[in-house]
Image 1 (tube, one colour):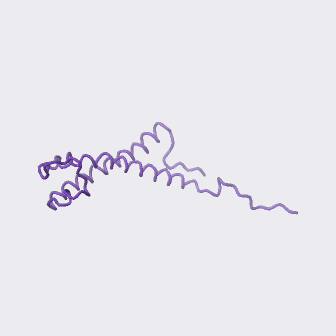
Image 2: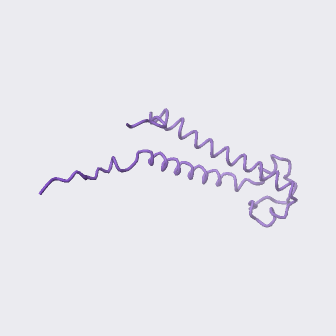
Image 3: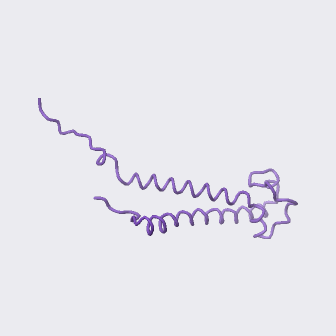
Length: 117
């Protein structure tokens, strides 16, 4: 009986770049969840930033999907949604850059795209 050359070596069959893709997806998901939890309850504060805090009597419990918010005038709703989007994606970018530049780069001392070959 002869020896077979088809030995399965997991390190060679699982591409190394997939770990970067998995890490990217995890960091992106966590940063988006954190940004949502920060921006959703503060819609009244965001409306005050754009000068529309008087559009509703109370902003308590209002989200972008609530009936009171949808019934606002389109220009007021557009201003508040636009500012909320800027704040949301700024938080996402801050967490994302904080992970890849500060934590991964300086604390863990890992290069972002280190060539393993």
